[in-house]
Image (cartoon, rainbow, N blue to C red; front, top):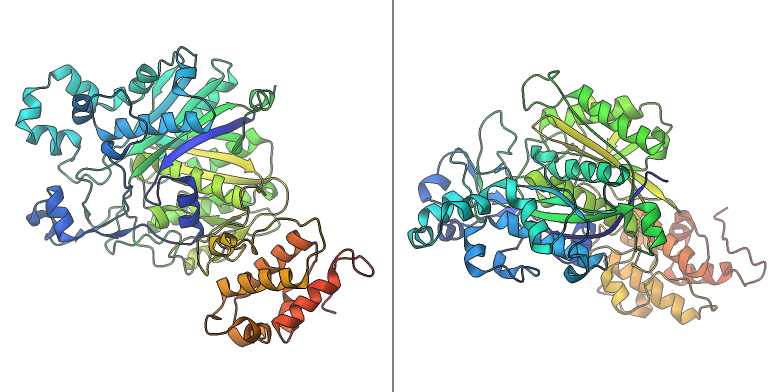
Length: 564
């Protein structure tokens, strides 16, 4: 039996959105959800003015637009239970039901089944010295609600011990129900435990994930010298000017099954966990919460050994990448130690500058980012990254300043999660481009879409990347090329005829955008052009001529145009 684990469903609520297409578009566009929190928002949320006017207070955050009132899958939860219960528990439950539905399993169909649940909720990373929580900011301040509540329901509703048990109870699941709390690595540690349950044969399906919200929901944080939070409110993972991380909220859950079982039962598979390894950093670190080089090297090598692969088999690493000077340097150094013998630089990135650091749910954001990237066929660049620190310039692990395309077939990606608790996790995930799921999708109207067409061009079809069985007309080629070019260059002032006479060098289209154009031409019509062919052509009309000349059923049938 294979040790591979299939991800057959998932649901996530992130600062980028709740719907998968919305999250995909946001990440592909290279946006950041980290934003200012206004004085009015903080006052309305109950943050005292004396708090946010204090020196060093940073009114910046990335928050998921989720509340119990907007949840999609909390049927059966009473109004009183919803008021007493920590919303993090409810978000986790909401995502569990959403993930099951995505996997083709209704809540009714799973009741009484031996399905496991593994997960954890937020540790209050941005709660400040008062350790603000749902209990301190809501229950303790609501006399009427406290008078209507009894201690057991308050305890059950607000202790992290009960976040997972609530899911098993509500859904009637009889498999292992395990709460995991390892700080920032909680989500990936939950996946590791879920994999162990599946491989041992203890159960055939496991829900695994995490949720993290902060209270009040509209707030910033108090910067302290020597801490992990950024004084500027901007996360610059792996960058020479990195000064810390910025908070974020959200959560998500993944449905896992043994790969062989998923194939046998015809489950849709989003991605495959090829290998995973977790471990403690032990005592070999400068302080309890300090990153540990040896521990990171050990879990990365362990996951690769579990997957049965070598350094050259990894196409990309989604790093922990918090944007702290020491943490990023240790992480890049550990990757250099593990991958130093590979033949090419290792692209590395982090989703935290885009979505914030989601506390215990950080691994959810990382895994969703990778799953969408594998489906899309490329990983977006790390937001806010410009250049690596001087110490990392010559290392094999190089942060991605641009989109990272995956090759044809199956690609393997590493994902790291390092907890301040000392628990480190690394997993290897594989997947393929999904031609039916607009493998080239990027954010609508964004210039950072350097590996594929945008949603705007797909909306009127000419840019959709689908192989055409018939020989295209010249007009079809013109429509596709002009739509692609308008999405990437400054051509708004030109009509169609004027655009046809323009040379691409005249408008400075980025070379990576031209790579995207050549790939669309190749996939749609089987014509292989080089970027130099496009640049050498004196007009768009000449590029259309090149495509027509290279069509496979044209004279010679080679489907290739050389730039000689």
